Image (cartoon, rainbow, N blue to C red; front, side, top):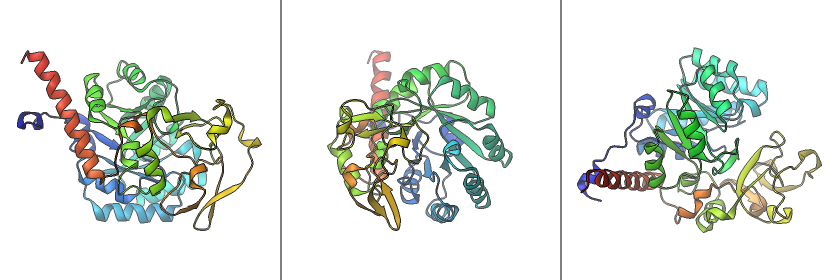
Length: 344
């Protein structure tokens, strides 16, 4: 990379809003995006997000406190209001506010009363959506940043549109910063996102396969081995989530038995069979739980989340190295575009 290339700016107004150096957001992967990973991304110049979906407030308190001790950078806590029991959600938000959390990242259905609560407390709100209608609802609710999630994304997928197509639709209707999410594992994807007017990208798979990720080493190794076409979108991993909630996972022994019928599974007809453990917590076949560092049992049969960008992941480096690689690639891609425009 030449000196001129290294000077190519990736900074967007989103960086000023969020307090990061480059517009690369860590996805709030439940179970995986713990303080070690979020702090590593934040300290390297990206934006860290703690994935605290349906976690007990005691764990949230421990994770937020550890995060605050590990970095002086801004970060968000990711919750999913529509998929969380109201009493637990209330306790989660209260815990975060008591600890001085200044930003929340929400996902799935927009709940205006929840957005209003944390906005009233002076917090920033990022909301990931899968449709143009949801983006409109999020803006009406008062969010500060819209994250446009495409069907290429790993983990829970709310919509069915390609990431760039959805982002373009949203950008045409809003002046809010729009972040694109869905299979972004290289800097070329970031450059392309900036080229259409987006403010940045959100990455999950790219950071799941890093040293600091709380994912099980088995899960990380499967991502390194996988190609994008090895992933499938299915709602068979649905226990403990609403019916019809689809996820993108690496194909495994569970999805291979579906004969290509990946969607339309009724959770009420799925057996409750324990296949793994996290301490004293059982993990069921067909649940949305992915294997973590602490998981033992039949890891292969669990939900192995990965986006369609998995084919570009070939190693398991520190998160800072992954961020630096994506940043360098993006700068190179933008530099080449600038050269072509100038005729050099």
